[in-house]
Length: 138
Image (cartoon, rainbow, N blue to C red; front, side):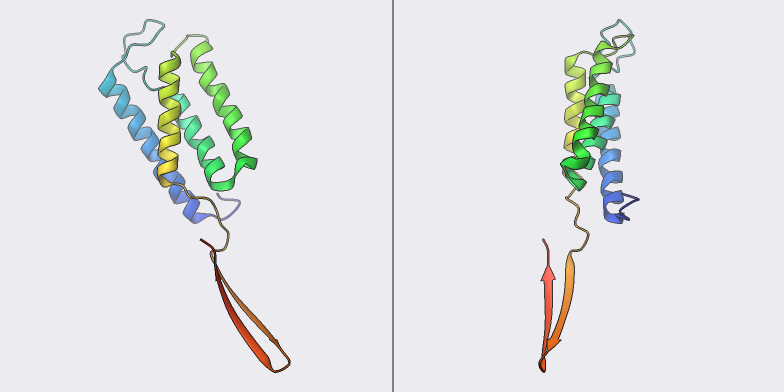
């Protein structure tokens, strides 16, 4: 976003990431599911680490394409796996799946593919003729 000077993308990311955080913590407190390793804090579903990592990965893929999305999804997949198979076994598969869906869904609500220029004005002259063109990319 910063390297491309993509202000619109910055705001899209802010909205999708904020929605991811809001949904994740809203669901954690609403569902109150205990963790598989026995902790009784009731905040297992959905996995917060998974939801934010998939929010970031899906934003990169949706906004800038698969060139950026594939490496980001690989990292997000590792994060999701580590939440199930980590040292403390903090989540089960449903928690991770919930995190993935929250992250992806929040991003797809607000993010559009990046286009550097939406409007292009052209001018051409030669042989006494003048041509003005307007090109708009949707």
